[in-house]
Amino acid sequence: MSSKVKNIVAWILSMLTGLYMLGSGYPKVSPSEGMVRRFENWGYSAEFSTIIGVLEILSGILIFIPKTAFYGGVLLSILMLGAIYTHLTTGIGGPMFAIIILLLALAIAYLRFDDKLSIKK
Image (tube, rainbow, N blue to C red):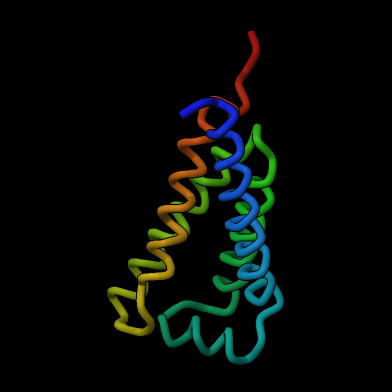
């Protein structure tokens, strides 16, 4: 894949995934009664919902910036592994959407690996 095509694909995936994560994280940061109930049904606290929301928003922001997109993809991958685990172990909700986001996050991390921040000596 040429670097131009790789960059275009990375931007498209980053925009779609980043926007989704911003939208997904916001309701968890200022949780409604329904969101709190959802997390409680999974065995988590309202505070945990807020933490997950902040991390989702952070991953969405990091994914938009080429130099930090790799780290955003890694963070989002970890979050989605947790979501998949939660869905599978509680039987509440299906993991398919989290699996799709996990694959997108891994693709972004792969495509932006060369762009990541490096420590200059």
